[in-house]
Every structure is written in structure tokens, then in C-alpha cells.
Length: 293
Length: 293
Image 1 (spheres, helix red, strand yellow):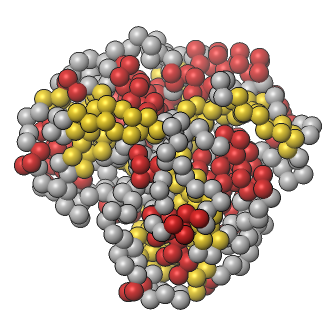
Image 2: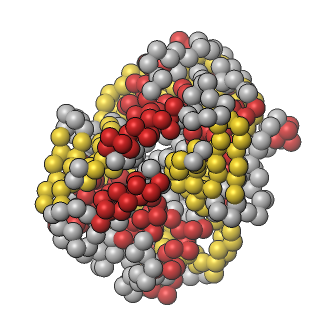
Image 3: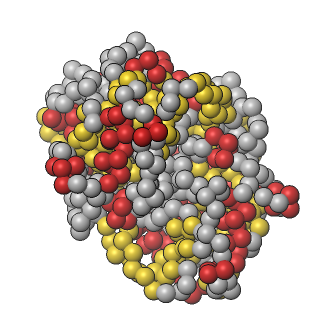
């Protein structure tokens, strides 16, 4: 990676942070002792005002962004609701998001609790809400941006390169990666970006979201809720993810490896300004092996 | 793959099943039209008696095993509780697990609902219950089994090889893969195996669990609850996963690729009967790229 590439980031991974990895002793295939670097994983319980919502497993950086972004992406924070404060308690492993008055979600939760005894299982229904009628902006995407982003992100020093077993999601604009979040939790990396955007008042309409994870329905829905019209990934698709992307007008690009990619939604917005034959295959050192799941 | 390898399976993937994949039209990097095979993803709502528990995203095969295994692995079905029936309704996308009388979990849920208004967030706490004092059997593991399993599994026709974007988990005994489950949902593949074991009364003590996913705390806890003393993966570790494995006496092997692997718990149980130098590197065609997550 060139120095320039890191300089572009507003937030970049901090693979040297002592809190995020641990040296663990073990043995390799020959029986030789080896010390390897392993990512941390901690529980974080998210509250919305007085209501316990969920316990997420996270590496533990940016708990405030994670909580805010999670609640926003789940549709638990409405557009009219003002966040008064976000309080993280490291010892209790909790983060409390406080709003002015009771949220629509809390009201619904009380009603649901009264009628069926519990609100588990409503989370999914709430995520789908607000998607009908949603139409993302018709943003053009140059293929040169996609190739430049993949190359820059693969070369950025990260917890993935240091310790593996982690997913990354990067908020980008044109050919520049801006905010690169990583996490052990499946969707935490994208929720942390959503929390950052909400805190900083950053709009999604001119952005591209790049992820190392699969393009499942949940990932597509989160991207749509963030107002980002382009979602790109090294990994593959699910049928429902594709269906929702087409419904909301999200450009969906997957299986990005070296010069190859597949576009399953929004092809008409792609500006093919790069000849794939001139893009080098991923060099093996920087090719991600996939974090597994 | 040799014919023999498939013949060993009690349950093998069925990549040709029409319900599990969909042909989707898209474009490749050159702008050429391509039709690719994409895995399905469907919501499935799991009930325990009259109580709605969770909505999982699944490819949709084996919903009964998934529901049973999920409830068992979450500690929602106690040892003394008898399952009377499991009813799947395809149209409603629900599966109901019925027990004799009310379960301990339902009682707890009612209490929790009375005190705090909701039971969201208790799921994690319940999973950790029953781990204290648990000690898995001191089962020896030959490295020749591990190499044979990885080779056989990589060559088994699967949804992964057909469509990608999916995780696999395989229940094995010595060098034989027995039950190979795949799913889009992070932990569904392992839950489906747990459900099969519970239905068939199959013990875990002489088994090895192989997964393509990462060795997180949740994966290690599920394996421990299933009574399986060995967990192996192509992917990496989290620090807490390693900690729990050491606590319950689980042999934990990760980063299995070609001749290489790393053992971070239970090294003293490994019988190193194979010279790694004589194991071929994974041939590229069969090496998984990782499903991402």
C-alpha cells in the first residue's frame, strides 16, 4: 500500500491496538509451538432508553457507533426521533442510546409484549418496514472506481491481515475508501458505519458500500436503510438479496476478485470505463481467503 | 471425488434440489449477459409450544432439524423435556416444536417478561448456562483423519460448489464424514446437525465437527452443548472461542488449508500419524475461497 491510500481514510483499521487482538499459544501442523494473533470477541448489550434490545458479539471498538447504527438499521430509531446521548459502560459491557421521550419502537414493543408475551422475532419484521416505496438515487458507478477500491482496501493494514477471522465493511466515495470498519460480528461492521454516518450527519446518496461479507437480504436491507445506492462485495449473493436490491433500485455487485465481478442489479448504471483485461489478477498475497462466517 | 466418498454420507448436500437455488440473470465484468446460480434464503419462524422464539434466515431444507437443534443449542430444551412433535408449515414459514408441558425456558421467559417487559437479549445468557462444570471426553484425534476429512469434504458435490455464498458443517466419525449440512444462516448448518443428532439419538462423544465458518465463542459453545469433543475449521479463531474451548476441554483446530493447520486447544490429544510434508497442498479447484459472511 502506498502512504497516500491510508491518508485518504477518515477512519482506518488500527491493527496495532492492544485491546483488539490477543497473542495465543498453540501448535502448527508439524507440532512446533507457535504464538498467533487472534481477534478479541466481547459481548455488548445494547439498550434503547430503559429497554434491553440485544447482546451483540463485537471486537469492542466503537461501541457507540455500533449501538446507534444497529438501532437505526433495525428501524428502531425513527426519522423524527432525536438521540440525546449514547453512554458506553466498559465495565458493564453495555451501551445505552437515549432519545427524547419514548420511541415508536418502544411503544410497539410494549404492545407486542402485552399481546404475545414477548417481542423476540419482531426484529426482522421491523427491518423490512420502510422498504416499500423506497427508491435509491440513480447513481452512476464507474468500474474504474470498483477496481481502485478493491485494490486499495486489500492493501490497507487491517485486523484481517493481522489476525484473520474478521469481516470488513468500507464506506467509499467514487474511488476513495473513507471509513473502514472491521468486526467479528456478522453485521457489526456495517452497523458501525451506519452509526458513524448518523453521528456525523453524512448522507449515503453519493457513497458506495464495500463489504467482504455475502450479499444476503439483511446486508441489502441495511444498505438500503442507509440510503447508499451501491453495494459491492468479494463474496456471493442470495436470491432474496438480489430480489430486494432490484425492488429498491440498489446496484448490486458481487464476486469481485481481481478483474472479475458479477452485477445482478443496476447494470444500466455501470459506466464501463476500464478494460478488465488490463486489470491484474489479484496477487495472491493480498487476495483475501474469506473470513468464513 | 470417488464414488466411495459420497456413499459414506448418511446425509449429503443435494445441489440439484430445485428449491434451494435459483437461476438469476446478470452481467459479468465484460458486460456479457450471464445466468448464475444463487442460493435461496427464506425466513423461518421457530415456535416453542405457544411461544414465538426467533425468525431465522435459512435455505429451507430440514426446517424440523433446524428448529430442534436451535432450541437445544440455545439451552431452551432441557435434558428432562420430551419433544412430542415438530410441525412445519411451509406456507406460513413456521415450525413449532411441542413438548410435554411447559419448558423451563418458557417459565423463565414469562418471568423475564414480567420483570423487564421483554426477553430479547436473554438468548445469549442461556447459551452460556450449563457450560460450567462441563468437561468433554478426552478423545484422541489422528491427524490423518483431519487430512482425509478435509479432502473428502472439499470434493463432495455441494451447494457451495454450485452457487457459493453458503456455509457448511459436517458431522464426522474418525476419517468418515457422516452428515453434511449447508445453510446461508450463520449457525443454521450446525443447528441442523444438532437437530438430526437429537432426533436420531446419536451421541457426540465419538464425533468430530468440521465447519467452514470461524471458530467464534458461539460455534464453540454449540459444539460443547452437542457433546462433541473436536471442532475443526478452515477458518480462524476468536480469543473467546479459544478460551471457552480450553475451559470445557474441546480440541480446537483452525486454519486448516492443505497441509497446514493450527491447534489452539487439546494439543495433547492429537496423534500425529501423518507427515505434513506428504500431504499435497490444496489444489486450487477444490480450495474453498471462504463463503464470507
